[in-house]
Image (cartoon, rainbow, N blue to C red; front, side, top):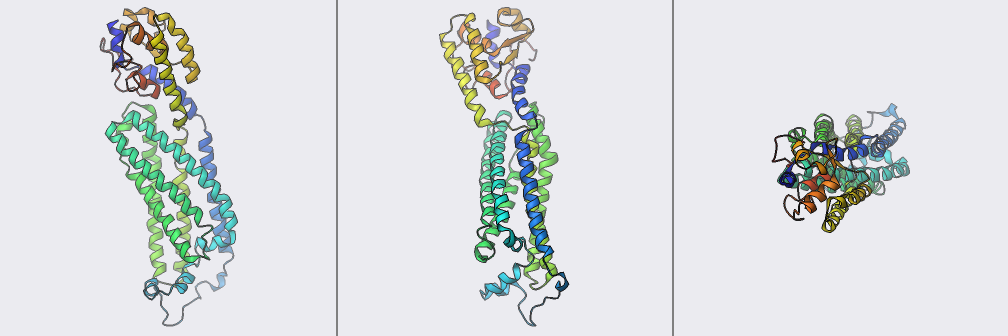
Length: 402
């Protein structure tokens, strides 16, 4: 009995794996999330390439480089802005830009861009919520709160970025002031969102060594795939900015205008890489918002059953209840000292159902439901099994793990 009471702090690695296997089965398959993200990235990239290529095919290349400003004309945007003479600036800046290319395909831009933005936001929202839950399971509370705060900020900036990108359609180049302001905000927010994500204080090394297979897999993919891709997109921002400065200081030069247009389009394609690279996470994403109530309902139902139970036999009905609530029957490996001291609670194969274990420890042994070691304490160690958290569970009666 004393051994059973101690098991409130016992690692139940095999049991945790059994519970996590259900989540892995959900996320380990080729998921609809990965397919949706891939389709959105490819579709939007194809639209961007078509729009800009169609524009370049319509250019009179025989006159390329022959266009020149009048002798003595101002060639710097700074001088025009100083005199607040904006019309010549807008006329010069539009040449070879993706914004100019959009004018002939505004309907296509909105038809493709709107559903793509919805897909990107939906997938990113679910991915960030899943990642925040994963960090709560794995990292210390202080680190988790700090990281999750920054992830929330990232999601807000990312959503605002998508809104600005869509507004470029109705606020097209024929409304130059509104268009250039919106385009600047979109590029700025793209840079900020990537920077926030990269600077979010997540200890990837700690996650890889945490013992949580899901967290280790995510950290490894983030380090090897996601972060290098995002840094490349940041580099595209720097190149586009350099080309923009060159164009602004050499108005009338077709070569600098074309260079900026090409790098601007490359940056837009880089945003598809930014949103698409997280396909490496989509296979692992579990719909946290849909699982959480089910887990809480299961814990609450067990607690209600435990208050009414008077003997071990009452547990079997609760096993069926848990199977109905969770969709599977969790089973825990039992340490040899528990098998020896309380053989009735286990099975010959060394496993015990979670429902039987919970009610045995909390009802048969008269362990208070709100005790720190109680499996029914929502913040207690055994309750973490529902969330796939193996930390802090050790058996005091023997050195054996499991």
